[in-house]
Image 1 (tube, helix red, strand yellow):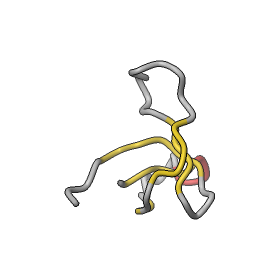
Image 2 (spheres, one colour):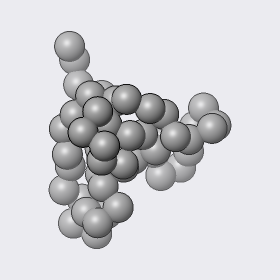
Image 3 (cartoon, one colour):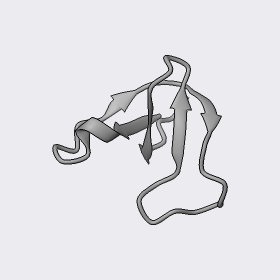
Image 4 (cartoon, helix red, strand yellow):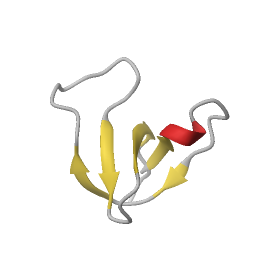
Length: 51
């Protein structure tokens, strides 16, 4: 999964990782679903990578 961290929102830099928790309560969100990666980093989903 590729996510954009809060600090990287302006640059659009993505971080790759495995999702640990889904933090957004609704099934959709205009800026992307917020997740926590296994590394502990929190950001919004930009792309789901194939396994």
